[in-house]
Amino acid sequence: MAKTSSVDAVIVGAGFSGLYLLYLLRWHGFSTRVFERGGDVGGTWFWNRYPGARCDVESMQYSYSFDEELQQEWTWPEKYSAQPDILRYIGHVADKHDLRKDITFETSVTSAHYLSDANRWTISTDAGETVLSQYFIMATGCISTANMPDIPGIDDFKGNTYHTGAWPHEKVDFAGQHVGVIGTGSSGIQSIPVIAEEAAHLTVFQRTPHWTVPARNVPMTEEYERIWKDNYAERRAQMRYSPSGSLRSVAPMDISALDVTDAEREEAYRERWAAGGMTLLKSYNDLLTSNDANETAAAWVRRRIAETVKDPAKADLLAPKTYPIGTKRLCLDTDYYETYNRENVDLIDIADTPIDRLTVTGLETGGRSFAFDSIVFATGFDAMTGTLLRVDIRGRAGQTLKKKWEAGPRTYLGLMCEGFPNMYTITGPGSPSVKSNMLSSIEQHVELVSDTLVHLRDNAIATMEPDRKAEDDWVDHVQDVANQTLFPKANSWYMGANIPGKPRLFMPYIGGVGTYRKICEDIVADNYRGFKLEGSKAGAAAAE
Ligand code: N01
Image (cartoon, rainbow, N blue to C red; front, side, top):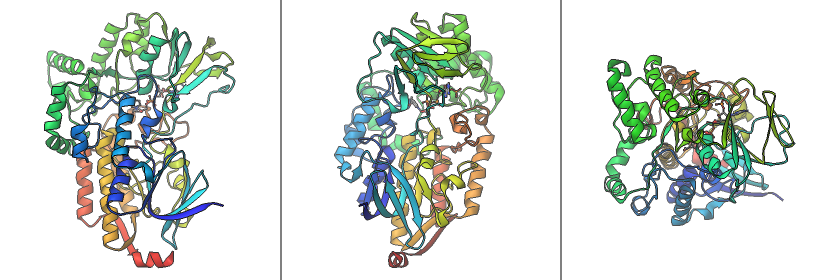
């Protein structure tokens, strides 16, 4: 018989956001259950264990700020941490705060239905459990549903197949193998150099070349760590109100790329290329708003590719030409272009000749057959909405989230949806989320939700949801801000363009982390402007 229990809050997901939320809600005295699909904490870092997986935000910044003792005692081995080190950190946080005891692992939430009369969510899992909860919080991350392309014959292949976003826990040994990698986004760009070193032969299938710049990852030095730790309070405060939720190693320049000489531009790009990381895009203030300005950086990077890759035909294929630099997620790499100088690495352009089918021994494309021992799908995610829409979520009057979002996600602040009372999304579509240092955005949303639940409890407010106009205005604002940039020009997963049939619109809020935080602060200070706060707790409890 199905088990049924009742709690104040159900959280879905035990990644960075779910864990911090559990910590805060528990601290505030809310009874809380967490359901997690994976076998342990970690979220994206639990699943993305592919060779070369590491974070492209510096670890001193891609880490929790809420626990001063933790941020002082923890030591990161490298500037940009590898996946095992990040997972170890998350595991340590779970241990330190004894979080696992409230988490049910290897359990997926399959449905969440709002019961108007009782003002409760009834939440069911694939383990047959049902939980009644006043608050339902999706902390499921933005890139947690792997996109496996629908290629004919995928079950015919007799070799091994892997997806970077659902990598096995045991070591995959490519030694002596012929390996194919499909996809050249961040996951492909990180894994290709590492697989190339191990495999006998690697063939990369590229549909669209991605822009990538050197990460310049280095071991952490005591001095660098000490400077951060001595200045954490001030630096974290700056991060919270910065455009991207992170601080740059080279200061951004508030000037147009078109208002300087060629020699000045050359020097600026060289300095940032040498420093590594995302700073290149901050060289000038209009690289992501002006085609002409953007093209100065794009042409400069194309020249670096041509300098690095010895085979001119490969270099030409690797140089993006169809969309502005930075409008798909800029990748950070270690020796990506250099890898194409290896004799055991081939690059196959599938822009005009998609993969026709997988066969028993490999795959066919463009009239050619390729034989492989293993094929790696580095084909990305049904990002931002995919995981939310896989759960059967129904709000007032049985309205499904799928129906509400059929033309694209509609949220107020990326936090709540009209018609879905007391349901929250952490870093949901319409918030800075993936256009920021995720840790800054996660902490902001988690603290906002936790403070809000305390406010509701203290004021005996039974239900909270956005009003329709506030939501409509926010959806329009998110698009207006995006349309002032070059981002909509790329067929990116930000636009939903990587998933056949997905509505095309820019999903994250690109107005900036600091701007967004101030908007949220104003809204809260103005008695949660744009939200309907209704009913009394006593009434809700009586109805239960
Ligand atoms: O996924 P992607 P990802 N046939 O969608 C190709 C974060 N992340 O996993 O560009 C052939 O970027 C697709 O081609 P195209 C980060 O936010 C962070 O690499 O659509 N090819 C593309 O080349 C990142 O942006 C880190 O034409 C197909 C690739 O597969 C996000 O996760 C590390 C295809 C998918 O690239 C996603 O990155 C890793 C098909 N049918 C990820 N379908 C760091 O922190 C798709 N492709 C460093």
